[in-house]
Image 1 (cartoon, rainbow, N blue to C red):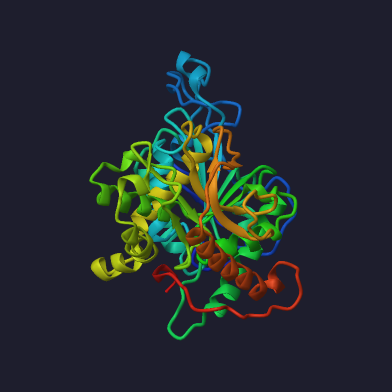
Image 2 (image 1 turned 90 degrees about the vertical axis):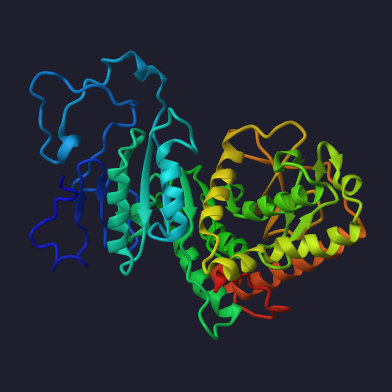
Length: 436
């Protein structure tokens, strides 16, 4: 089976403005022009299984189909899209953009998205995958695996290195790609290098994405990267930007369940406060086990304050030492959990953690940063901050430390958020192992 139809000049034009990678199962678009472009309908070859108005695949007509010259393989067939009754149950296609799409986290995530595990078994999906020139061949391999998987919900795949193309009309943007921290690199340097990436991606989202796009920033340092991204996207609500702290929440639930001798579904109301770094604050004061406060179930309060907190903060590093690689699979699972928390109503009385914009928060946390806090959702993609939480001196002291770190990171990236000259006075190096 042929997997791609490439032009004869493919080798000489790889770095040209655009190429079309059209497959038997997944229509794929490439763009190599990295200059910003105004929002408009793209020219060139474009194929999808259905239009946005038609939501389900049905049987091929028995008579000779009309061949569409711009398509390839099965996408050239004409479908009678109103012929089957089941089409009434399918929904409008959702467009999801993913950066760092050739990486290990995306390798776990993309197949969950395409299978219907995330948005539901009746939700057609278009995946738009952003890579780099260096990773482009691997990105083609990802697209080939997606087409070979024959997902009926996957209607379109686009690949490219230009965020202004890949983010076009995106309703969800999952920003995974970021530069890892190399030997001898200061955390301030990492903030600047990755900050420039997320500043450019924010500008691209602002120019071409859906006005209500939901953005989840995974690439570290994710809190400050999310702040940089939202500051460069003034036409998108700041509330729509999230920094991923759900993996930290999942790790905290696991440790509490192990200590209490219960299954993890008995643990609720767990919050990760603050930065996605070793200053993060896993909150056991407000967490519950079987509906009871954690401190009533786990009597060893010294363990909660010391060992529990440290285990959550350093879990990623321990995993790397054990396995020799970072936690790509569990990160992908936590991205799925984060999305589901926004598109599924939060169970009554419970909440979830997400790094969100602090303006208007009820906790006296400094405004104009991205800080992980407890959230609830009605399942419409939006959220509200939880007001009924308790604080004690231990929790407040930890919150102040992680808040100070985020304010220092903000000053260190002032040149990327329109606040003048950067001043890097980071209090200490609190990098997570995944940044290296």
